[in-house]
Image (cartoon, rainbow, N blue to C red):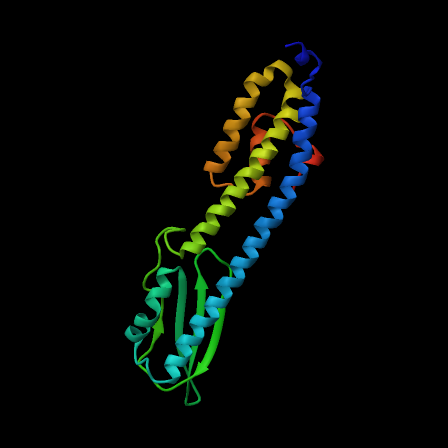
Length: 221
């Protein structure tokens, strides 16, 4: 077994440098992927909102919608997907106009379409099927996307936390790190459970709990 004597393992410094390099490369890539996913989702939502509004408009102009109950039959499936349709009838100068607005649970996207149509029994239609809690409605695509984005956030927070422990907590506290590291990890978990969703909020909260500042090179926001 003498041939093993010439083999050298990685030193602690080499391990730390490797972790730092990995984090520097991985985090921006994850951030870009996350932003691309959000942009794609917003585009998909906007496209669907336009399609829903046009569907309502065409049905009104064609005389297929006579009342709010007729609208409900057309829109209830969209509502189950998390879309929030509002239809308002506006009478002005003898002209009947309809304001069709489509929102989406969990999205800032909003689309409004005005259409002139025949007189109907529509008053002010508001969504009937509205999920009571965030995430309880929406398509499978929405749920998968939310899961992926949450996973990316967890990975970024985990990488950041590892670097903060290795390069900030351990050098600052030495042997006391045996106590401080678990406190820091619990603070990160508590911050997430308290509703914090951005790295900035989680990092500042957790670091503050153990009385440490965040160096500039770990301010990834």
